[in-house]
Image 1: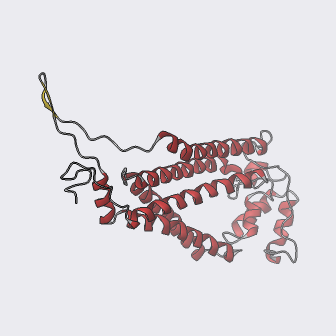
Image 2: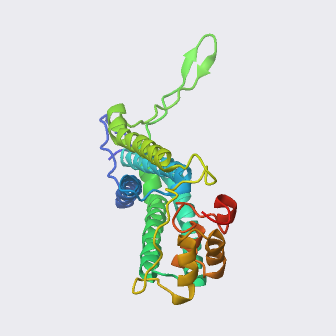
Image 3: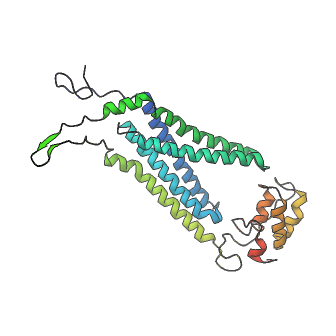
Length: 298
């Protein structure tokens, strides 16, 4: 038996303490969370490449992708540090940030679903379930990483502090314990793909934004083709005879009809979106400002 980790009475090195299950579980959940976050960035990139660009929100989408990649990188780093007994601070801080952000998004989503008439309740339910899953991962990870067994194991893994050294000039000088770091090769292998994905997302969204931005005419500064699209036809999902006339006038260039369509339809209704985008001429909504953008007629 040893009096403490690393020292036996006879001078033999003591075996390292076994890694507790909660530490392994917390690290694995951190890796899973990082994978889900990076998958989300990939979805955004693919959506942009196939033409489902976020329009006027391209800059915001790029910032979100960078933030998500940063969180994923910290998840990977925190998991690696914990597995190697180097500490749990990164993992705990990242888990708290992720739990707070996802919890806020979940609250907003639940309130939004409760107060508006959704055109696709199944999609809303799926979105809420996805957010609940993303919230559960950091919460469970925090619970596991905060267990006393993990704290005790990390304390036992910490190298003993070397004895002080005598110096004729400074007297007794205490030596700091060597820090346990993740090997550079392992760190590079884990974080380099995250950095590459962040760059790819930023460049892709920047190129998409440059390809759809309207640079001349009354709609300058907005993204979109400037060409109207067809409103929901009879028999289509979302078609409403009450608003079909306004939608047809909006398509034909009556910008007052587009603004009326935005203001008169329920929040989240397909006709509200059609009016806000001036009959599909813009990717980003004007919130009832089609007359200000295009004039009374287009």
